[in-house]
Image (cartoon, rainbow, N blue to C red; front, top):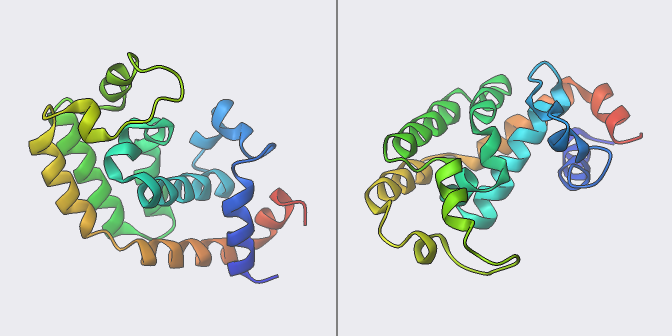
Length: 164
């Protein structure tokens, strides 16, 4: 099984127990654990590709945003790590934090469907524009290439985590 195969399988299985339990029990914050490091990176890439950078900040993945910055650095994505850090700084300066976004969502009914723009109206438009500009410069393809190299380096740990 190649490192590409392992990464592909890992990218699916992190959303199922027992790997998904790492989010609930805080194990995902352990940056000395290669499994946690890659979970942060995959969660980041998945959330941004599905819902955009603003929703990464506001969704459960944003709870681990600072750890994600460090995880990107650990897999060799120094530039992307700095870009995400700059995004988080813009968001924080505007008050667009994970907690603030969650607070706005608290009035929604469970399973309500809405968009970031519809929910927050113009509240964070200026910050969002700067964030979008920085996000458009992030090389997500390189992140996944580095993730594959990271898996290759820690192949035995990933095989064990995947029950191989």
